[in-house]
Length: 63
Image (tube, rainbow, N blue to C red; front, top):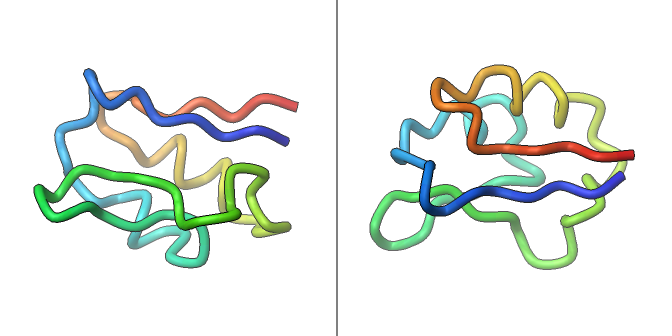
């Protein structure tokens, strides 16, 4: 699995962090980013749900 966040689309709603805090965090400006070493999802079963929860679909999950 590979996760990416389109920083040009992200509005910093934080739904990904609330849904999957073991994979996502927010930078100093409030925009979403992946925790270090978590670009593969780290086995978190909620990664896809976090992507669906994004109100602007800034998160892409690929197999």
